[in-house]
Length: 115
Picture 1 (tube, rainbow, N blue to C red):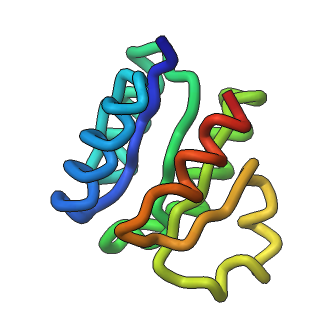
Picture 2 (tube, rainbow, N blue to C red):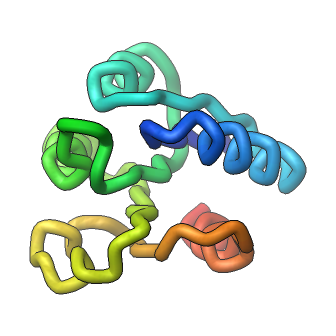
């Protein structure tokens, strides 16, 4: 079973993603900030990261660069409420970019494609 790390500062979204992805057969761990995400990545074998771009005062794009540098090959799906970041070349390091929605079909499809 693939293990997915969901990094988002919104508790309701973390809960929704965890429940929906668990229903798809994935093991899901969550993090509310970049520090917790970094610790999880260091301590656990993660197969894919779903990463918000704006995490309170932190930048998910900075976290993405750290993941790419330290764990090359680990798939990352950026999941943001903002479409404008698609034009930011820093977001191009991600394997996929999904706009947040209560309908998780696109997110699930990208995760399945990458795993």
